Image (cartoon, rainbow, N blue to C red; front, side, top):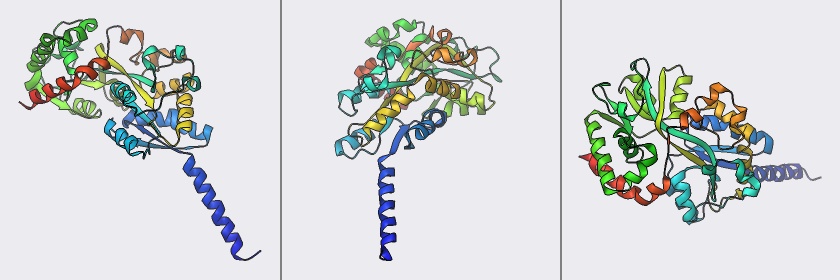
Length: 345
């Protein structure tokens, strides 16, 4: 054998190994924070071991424009993307996502109806809730009317900077029942009513734009109450912070697994989604962060302590409002522009 041949064979083998590795590297995109960490432990790491692929997590803030740019340029580098409900619906209509082959995922009837979509598989239920620091607020707020009660609860409040959720909260604070919120908000009079109610709090508001901010504001004493994603408060509680949640009037929604159109790893992505949708895997995830499972058989695998903190637990969901993504798809642009102008005044 010529002396250069072993080196040549080694180079060929290394090249082949690199090619195999490249074929089995999957990029999965999430919103980071405690949710991203929980997904890594419950889904990515076990799937790596089971399937022999490398999962590469990437954080983003829900920018649909990034997915759109990749798909239109036919240079898709993301394989699986955690997508919020308005975006999965709009992206599906625009052809940005692959259609889900539900025969490879599981029985649709085993999933809660809100988690089933032509272009997405529900990952978890999450809620935007009233959060407060129990070291500073001795009498827990019972609903959004208390959040608005400046006499009983003097001090700053924090709300997400945007129309979405805040207009619903304002109407509930003004006495509208959760079941009637979107009927009222769909009318010009209802939208005016919501903005008028929101104006009552404007001098006392501190806006937040990232999910990590509400618990930070509460712990620092910058605000006495805040709207917040329930999982962020759960993460703070696990760190020993005395933050609490009021579930009445919370707004819940679903995040979805989606596959960008043209993903080079579509087949592996579908295998991963099926793996992550297994009730046992979803139970592992729910134990790590208090977001509710989408598979109907998962709740039975969780103990009472875990269930008590989930948005989908009956006691927490009974006075909650389902986020109406179709309403916001239809009217969101107008309401968000109006909010931006109002907030800037």
